[in-house]
Image 1 (cartoon, rainbow, N blue to C red):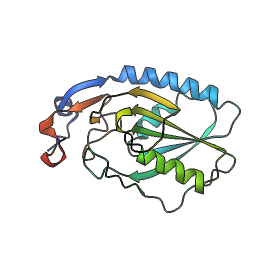
Image 2: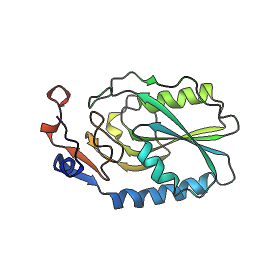
Image 3: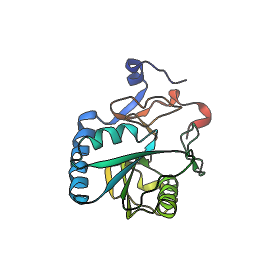
Length: 192
C-alpha cells in the first residue's frame, strides 16, 4: 500500500520525469503566453479538481491579468491507474460564463474523455465567449476523444505518473515533482 510520509514517498518513486524547477520554468512560459493571448479580454480560469489544483495555483500567480477562477470537480479514474471511461460531474450547478473567455486547466490529458466532456458541458450550458484547454501533461498516445490542448506543459509517454497534483489512491499529489511509482507501490489489481 502507498506510504504517506514525504521522505518515504520519494522512496516510492521508480523514476523522476520532471523536477520542480523544470515545472516552474515551463509554467513561466505558459503564463506569459496566456497573458499575451488574453490581454484585454475577460478571462475565467476553470480548475479541474483535484489534480489541477497545484498547477493552477502556481500558474495563476504568474499570469499578469485580472481574472476570475472557478473550480469543477469531476471523476473518471475512481482510484485506479486507468480512466473508467465514465465522467461524473460533482457540481450541483454549472457557473454562468456569459461574456467570459474560459480557460479549462487540468493536470493531465490522457484519453481525452474527461476534458472533452468538460469542454462540451461548459460550451453547451455556460455560454462562454470561447473555451480553451491547458494541461500540465499530455499523453498523445492514449486519445479516445478528439481534443488537443491549447497550452501544454510537457508531453509524456504512456506512463502512470504521480506528483504535482497527480495522485494514486489520493496520495502523492503533494510531491513537488512528477515521477513514476515503483510497481510494488501499486495494488496488484491496478498494475498494467
